[in-house]
Image (cartoon, rainbow, N blue to C red):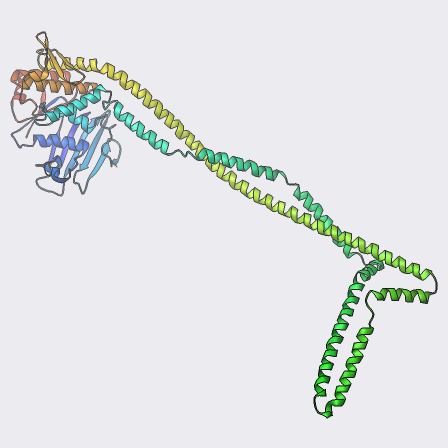
Length: 549
């Protein structure tokens, strides 16, 4: 990644200032409070933003430190850089109430970046790695507890295979989180629901397989129609006789029952009236006597009426007497037999009709149950289709889970394999860089499992903490540069050094500048309040870009 141009709208002391950058080494110098650290901080803010702390920490955080001195309505700017084979411009408004981030790619439109600039655009560079490797802020290279902890953690990530280029630990954490999210999409009751619906579908299909009621219902409809037609077609004399046979007794009994009742009512009324008149004046005695006589006549008539069951016998005996021969009796017996046969036939038809109707109602109920089963089957098929579609989607999710599990296993093995080979590689890179920075004074640097640094010098191994401040800072710089070499093997990352050579003597500084010019593949930005960096570069005839503030 190569920095091209910084356009400061308002940031700290700067207002509408522009800076252009070239390849190689840049020396940005000026007196104290000239804005060297401000420009350094602006580059980081354009790449990763600037968050405001909360509470008391907000008074001294970087956000408050670099608030514009004037024009407080504006806070931000833009930074153009080259990544890969394309030029990008990132624009940011840093105000907490008007925060925004836009990215413009060469040949493409301007797009909003809600979560900041993509890591892909920054070639995998993240803010923690930026702070721990390629960016050394003013007075932050000293091996105090804070810086040592940060670098130890950064180196621990690298040693465990968790470098930003691989990020094994973080990648495994992301994969675990994604696996949990995928597993949350699975419905454990789906299989049982599908099984239940399939069983219900089989039961309903068994019911629908029996549609014999349709033919049975048609036959019963014909049977009912035939019975009704036969009953309606009986209009001959024999049928009429049978009807007389059926109805004679009932009608006669009805009349015989009605007559005594009516006579009794009339007699009661007449007797009551006669009794009243008897107690009245003598004028009404004849009328009372007449009422009693009428009541007696009605009572005699009712008692004289023959019983129903005696009538056929009397009629029959009368017919025999009047006929005077046996042929009349035979004829009467034949009619009686015919009426009985017709009556029995009609009763049989009625029984057939009643049974046919009962069977028809039963077939109708079976048809209704069949139609209900058909509706339930269609609903079950629709629900089953939806569940099977969901099951197919869950099968894809299960495949994703299996793929994630396989990726986690592979990544863990890769991280373990890399960790076993990264230590020696880093030790070798550290030794080469330290030898170049110190002019060969220290050729071998090693790190133990506790991240303690040891230097091989004069045939013996000594802890780095026992060396001078200048040598120790060279060792930390070598560690950062070795980390950059491991994390970004493609090279080309810019290196920002803010007054990190204060403890170097001229010889150490000359060795370091020479090594950076000859070996570091990216841009180098040296922010300094002294003139000796520029003087030594000129003395060593090393080309550089000078920016005076």
